[in-house]
Length: 635
Image (cartoon, rainbow, N blue to C red; front, side):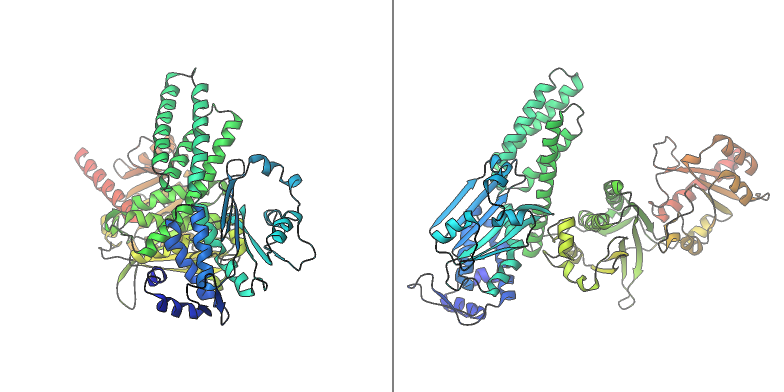
């Protein structure tokens, strides 16, 4: 990223040699603003240089004016693009909150805030043919106006003719499917913009508008701060007559709000921390039942808008850190079960409204503790599972599995994480491009699902930092599967050891959901103690969906064995349990329940599929040993 910026300080000769690649001859400084192309613009190389420049230099400017000025001078000087006017109309978060206009010309810069009534009355104040109206309403993907056109929208024509402009090109600023304004380039060059110039604008537009949105943070934060302070004051007055508990809660909110407002004033350029505070505080207010509808709508708007902007900021800053090399990983021994549980629970709650369920399958050789960076692993899994939830069809599954595998070529052990969704899928031609920054599978994906196009790029770089790899497999209209492999140097559990620990023991699973109705492949691998594990570990397992069926499966000959019952808490019937204990004989059975409901039973699992098999079988083995010892003492 720093190659071009560092080379600019090494003299005119070096600069000119770089510019020749773009077909530009740079004349001596005594002839200002004179740039002549001797060959067509090399668009792809120019785009790459601008992307590097934006993400190295773009974040260091004080404001939008500095960014637009430097950008305009940069592309004029470096690429010979005849730019004489750059115009950006942007909505900071929402038209009712913030909207701004910026206009750059070589000798003049204008910035102003748009009054709210302009947006409410724009249909009567402006011609529907004005470029930004056309783009906002989605009637065109771009607008181009030349001085030779027989019709130019009236408001545009005034400044266009008066300023002697010859060519105008405008693109919309679409962020996560929502119009955020637009960006327009204009020139007085008699020949107008070349087709290479237009292609250059189109290819750099997304990165440029992303950086521009980040630079509106001071204005956005000031507006949000004023509005949030007013909302909190109003809320405090409304709760004056509430009980003591609500008064204490409100006092805490006011205290935290005051601290954050002070922080906004002193840290205006640190955008991530203020945005996170806005999201957190608005979440607290959203949980209240005593807020008016109008106030609740405002808080919802603040919360969702700040969350969207925070996502963009985090993506861009994480990407910039990774690219700059200022990024470290913290490898240490971590509890893998707890690490993945937190991610699975979060995603499960997030996709619940789509009736999508996360199915987990963990291999029997998987240990509880591994060496890696827990925070970065969670970030990787959250990105992949979050994408799977976003693209899953309603009522389907997200399959999440973890296995230990051995690389056949190197003999190295690896831990493999696989995330599979049954949504729209990805075209094979896009397998490489989706990992590039600012790239998505299609324009439709960006329009419908939103996003910066940085998620998978960041994920792949994090995986690379951890010494791993990522791959994708997909079939359009059916599924998409991402596989992550990280190096593993720990011990491998041998499932066959449980054959000895649980000899003469039969595990009985009583679950009304025992039979899956899914038509997807490998459904048996997502069952509790799946058939593959049962075979490898040499276990004796009986599965049943109701008590009567279980009695038939056990038969009459139950002597000489120990039975471990894993009973879904929805089927927990005391009469049936006591009858079964009597039938089996005192001390010949161990009992566990499982399910998501809270219980005081210490022998209880929240899930049989969400727990690593080694942990589940260790717990069962310890219980069997304990019950055998108790039976022997009592005898």
